[in-house]
Amino acid sequence: LGSELFCWIFCNLMRHLTSAGPTDGSDVTQTPLLWANQSQSATINCSQNKDVNHNQMYWYQQLPGQNMKQIVFTTSYSAAQYEEGFSKEKFAVEKKDAYTGSLTVKQLQPEDGGVYFCSVSKHSDAAD
Image (cartoon, rainbow, N blue to C red; front, top):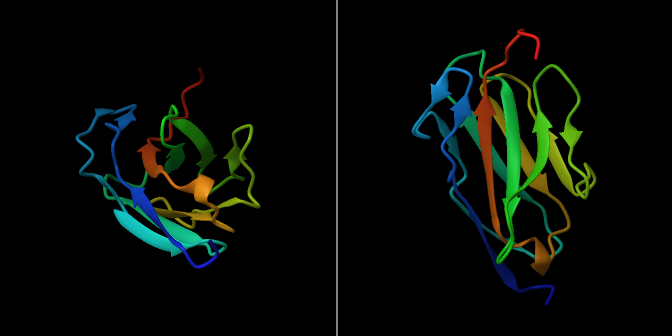
């Protein structure tokens, strides 16, 4: 199995909801399709062209037959916040600026194959 190729499909499926209202998804782009070998790493890039205030990025995973799960929330100004069951050792994120970010899935295994995607949100200073 070590040399088998696994199909990784990364697509921008959600409508992106921000505090400025819904967008049609054309403001956010990411790696559309990626093939990788078992035990390798796969990096998905994500970018947005709305504005500098849309600096919050969310990464999601949907495995075959399962519901979508949030992996991590990240910004360029704070530490990444991982959801339960996900770790930085397996799912490394990088966000150097408001416009771009990446997710790297490390040590790929067959059970990692699925749909991965990003969304962005506008930072707000308003208290909840």
